[in-house]
Length: 189
Ligand SMILES: CCCCCCCCCC(=O)SCCNC(=O)CCNC(=O)[C@H](O)C(C)(C)COP(=O)(O)OP(=O)(O)OC[C@H]1O[C@@H](n2cnc3c(N)ncnc32)[C@H](O)[C@@H]1OP(=O)(O)O
Image (cartoon, rainbow, N blue to C red; front, side, top):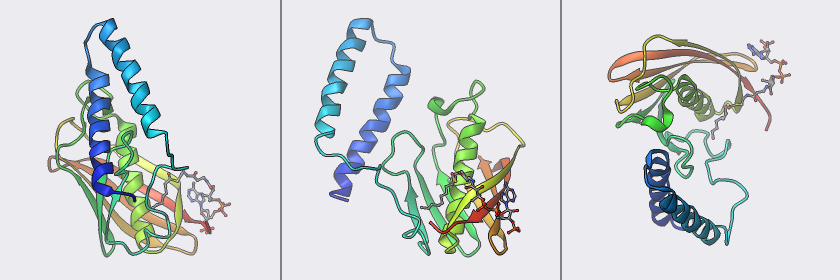
């Protein structure tokens, strides 16, 4: 990466901007001015573009005890993942906000699934099991509140010839709100 600090600053500003766009109540003239100014910022950034949003590759993820998932992607929540033997976890100390709302005041279930799927597949990858998700069973046990500390957890349960079973959960303020079982299938590339 060309300069992590500078990119981190940009991404942080981008996340704040996305939140502001979602919540703004300014008048049409200000909305139009903001749109025009954003188009000029977009042009500045597009002067040099990567083909993909920079991220860790499958191969680099093997055996890394900690990594930063979606650090450079303002659209998805950023997860600091940690792996320790058969267990993986990721913390979101401030939880998620209204950008990720499903029922009023609650986290959208699909976002819970993204967080769990990201961690369970990455835990398998940490063990050198290059995989994709083939099946995912989800049980939403309790509502997950917004703005509440979240922990995503995963446990490597079974490794078969091509199939890997990993359990996952979402813990909100100490309570398990979502439980999942993933069937991952090993792939060549
Ligand atoms: C940087 C770190 C990155 C970490 C990883 C990132 C992963 C990102 C997570 C994702 O979002 S993955 C995207 C969503 N998933 C897909 O797009 C997968 C689409 N499906 C496929 O590509 C194929 O269906 C698949 C490769 C999963 C399986 O096709 P194959 O023809 O290669 O396998 P096959 O059908 O022979 O099945 C292999 C084994 O898996 C089992 N299997 C396959 N699908 C299953 C299923 N849905 N449920 C249970 N078991 C399943 C199947 O029974 C068999 O078990 P056995 O080996 O015991 O006989």
